[in-house]
Length: 94
Image 1 (cartoon, one colour):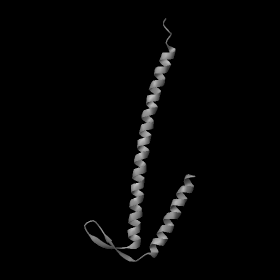
Image 2: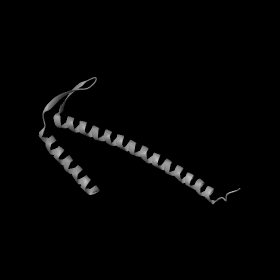
Image 3: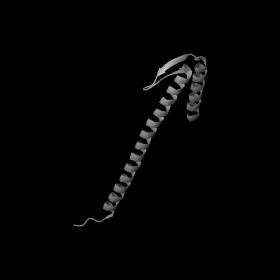
């Protein structure tokens, strides 16, 4: 499954690269403080790459947050399980 997803990603990248090579038209791009002329393929590549990087950053952050939360809760459950085992092991005093 992992190999298939990597293969699909590589094929999408190659198709994007082939289509981008056909778009050599110059376009004006307005920055916040400046303006520049770029090839359409370059501009699309930068936008795609930036979006990909931001997406991975957000997903990675959420994944790490969930993993740390899982570890913290697992430790809490183990601690409570030990306490419960100790309570069960003690004889009842009447």
